[in-house]
Structures are given as structure tokens and as C-alpha cells.
Length: 69
Image 1 (cartoon, rainbow, N blue to C red):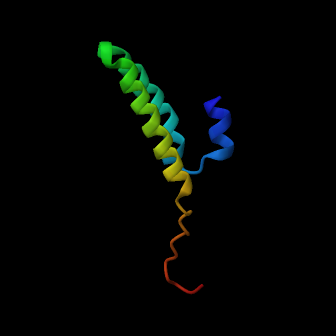
Image 2 (cartoon, rainbow, N blue to C red; image 1 turned 120 degrees about the vertical axis):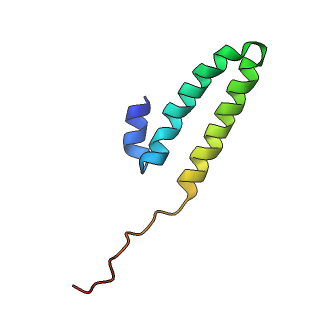
């Protein structure tokens, strides 16, 4: 699902890496014992914040070399 979603809706490598990074961190949270659920929830919430922040940023214009051509 991530591959299908990111192909059409994510621009740039930073946006495309948010979901796989979140999945890896949630897996790592399973080793935290009693704190696993809370930590996974915090990781997911931060993932949403990061995704929305990256999506709201305006696209960068290409940098020109300044040479008239």
C-alpha cells in the first residue's frame, strides 16, 4: 500500500521515507515492554505531524545558475 500511495501523493525522498521510517520505529517499540503501546502511539503521532508538515511546505523552485542563455 505504501508503494502505491507514495508513488502518486508523495514528492521528494523526504516525504517518501516518513512511512517506512515510522514502520521501523513502531517495530522497535515492541521491545519497550510496558511502554510499547505508548511509544508506538507517540511515534505514529509524530509521523502524522512530520507528514503534514512536509506536505504543507511549498515546493522549491529550481535554482538557476544565473547565466542568460
